[in-house]
Image (cartoon, rainbow, N blue to C red; front, side, top):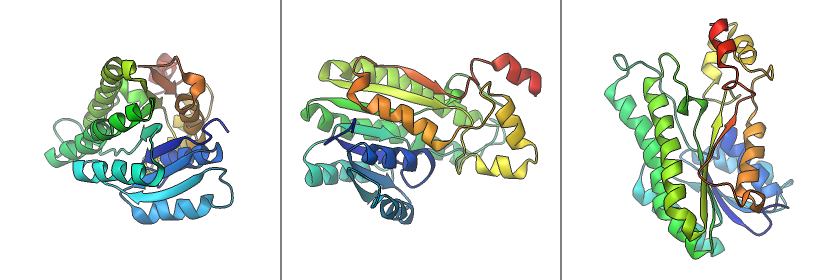
Length: 259
């Protein structure tokens, strides 16, 4: 019960890392507002949690790229629960392409969701957290915050941006009692990685080989770290980028050799 009585928002909660984190937070006693642009997916997740959560989960449809939608999410959370202790800005998208091939609208959409979405969650969420006495703000970044790969120029740019946003906000809002950290997953079994893993016969084998741990990450692996960062156990952790990648970034020479 590491989040007992805390109020948490998780964006992108309909699937993958967001879903696993929302379920884990609720199991640890939090009152979770599970937000996603796909309302059906969060409603399904809420029904899944009804028999296993010690806390509670409510669904809320939100477009993180819309200021009005994010502001409404925060307002609704405060109306329902009266406070906000944890905000996990997890919603994100990946559209492939290099700087020449990537359509401009894909570039704009990734920055709108991945970067502006985190900014808007902070803009409206952090004041609510300060008013509640402080808390933990988390962002899903990526190993691509540190290392680029081919044909994901725009995605890599957004993830580098949110890592720097994490650091800047930690400096700005730490004095107000809000810790800001980001999580940098490696290959993880989510809808985002599914096309590559399914379309490339040896994709799964390769993704497992480049991590010294010898396997692809699961959403629950990321959720465990999110739980630690959301809880008071990480009270002196601020402005940090946490690699949760099975050793992928530690073993970059191995990854390069396998390409």
